[in-house]
Amino acid sequence: MIKIKALRGLRPRDDIAAQVAAPPYDVISSDEAREMAKNNPVSFLHVNKPEIDLPSSTDLYSEQVYAKGAENLRRFIAEGILLQDPQPAIYIYQQQWQGRTQTGYFCLASVEDYDADRIRKHELTRASKEKDRTTLTDRQNAQIGPVFLMYQAEPVLDGYLAEAATTSPLVDFTSPDSVRHTLWRIDDPARIAQIEKGFARLEKLYVADGHHRSAAASNICRERRAANPDHTGEEPYNYFLAVIFPHHHLRILPYNRVVTDLNTLAPAEFMRAVEEKFDVQPAGAAVPEVPEHAMGMYLEGKWHLITPRPGTWDSRDAIEDLDVNILMKNLLVPLLAIGDPRTDQRIDFVGGIRGPEELVRLVDSGKFKVAFAMHPTSIEQLMAVADAGLIMPPKSTWFEPKLRSGLVIHLLD
Image (cartoon, rainbow, N blue to C red):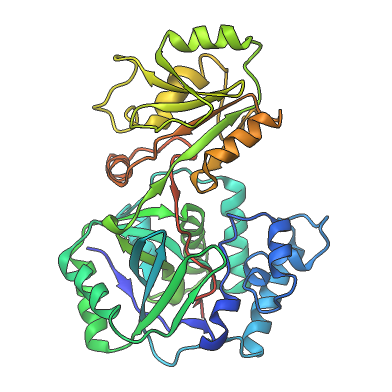
């Protein structure tokens, strides 16, 4: 039984929502954020990447950054940039991009469901990033970026989404990355109750993106529950901000790999070693179409399609069947001696949104020696891994489009 809840959203004034809404904190660098916000005093980047208002030498995890984030949020509220809706609502959030549409419920999810694994995860968190999000949430006393969740598509809930999307929206704009963002509000108590009952019929949700934000919400809940002798379980800290999409609306883009060197091997030696476990087909100067259980490999100015030989992976195992794991097990570890991909400085990851051109650019620049274009992990594979209680290899999924931050905020008091 999944519990969701309406909230009195803190939102930008409708007339400036397009200027306020900003990319999530973890998809652009501090320098990119400074450039993006330099002529926009109402950009939400001042709240979710507050280091942009401090000297560039400032430690990103310093107390100065967290204090500036809290100060900027208070300023946005005091100046009327952000206003709180008068009554609880569930918001419907739609994104349209490259001919696809995804529509989901902007609401509160339950920390209890998260802790009990009714909200299932597929990634490990990094302690430094988890602490960072926990501290910023605590200082701002608000959840400023939604967690990206999904549910196994269900006709009744899907129908409520479709119905809401036929009404007049609060906000409708296209961001600079060509994504159209539309927001509706459902504040009728009877319809809110129907939506809550619809989710209560579900057994589970899945984290698509936002593992650090959801972990931070759990940390905040635990800390505030321990400090509150009158804890009831209904305080705002018992919930976290989320957008919940039906799974069939979503798609995952590839998460590609680049490696700095060939582990002392000459290119010809490396190719011979690859051919021991992969069928290698030359693809010339153009990136090959990458089918499932194959990879494009860019080396010495040429693309190759490499396909693992039978017996080099187990398709019956949810982790073994992932292409990123097949590449890791059969090439990155044994041939290139990549250790822990979370910490090994010789490997980097390139989101599929940047396209194969970025892989060519990185290798041709000399910064990297070889690149691998991946087939994307499927939604079904993600759910299979999460249902099995397993953890995907790092950087297995890249969801696009990203949820815009600043459209709805959850205050924790």
